Image (cartoon, rainbow, N blue to C red; front, side, top):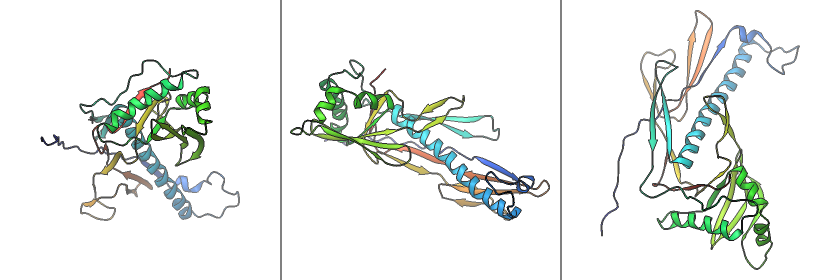
Length: 288
């Protein structure tokens, strides 16, 4: 019996380092919602700014990680942009986890509200087999918003859900983490699938609002199919002269310009997102 082939590559995590500055003039002004007779001192306002800035910078990094996750889920690829000395230029590197096995299922016809349930069930079952025949789990079906609307309004599917003697599934919404909703579950040829939607959006480099989960696509996968790794961050802490290596996923850095009364906060992160197996998810464009 032959051993399974393995491939090893060395990847350098991208540098994500959003920053924000705080000036002395900003501390002299009342914040939004602050009372007219507020007695907050500049030091107290600085503390409030610092807490909010760190939260906002962390969120900015999380959004970039979500974008990488979305690209990997639906294309098995992600473009990582390394920050260079010139803030207007980046060193781009393409992460490509495409394997020999197909990860895209092509429908014979797009789903509509009046599409027979047997057609939808057959398509989903074929996607399940693409994973299970390789020994990979298939438990979660991530739906774009248009796909979710088609399924929820498919009369034949609703009739199957009302059949008490046949466990086809149930549609009962339940909120998960921020932006994610568990619509219910479907049983397809003995395989129970969680139906999940994710409505969060992001603004791309061109200023256009886009969905993390494309509205007309689905992704069949399972929990823990991907993982995150983080590279270390090497910095010279404020007030020190030696380099320090940090292994945290987020590393704040404070730089003070005393000549101009400016403090800059930067949060550094070096995320690398990847699947645990080759092609552990199957995607398909199912609606127009």
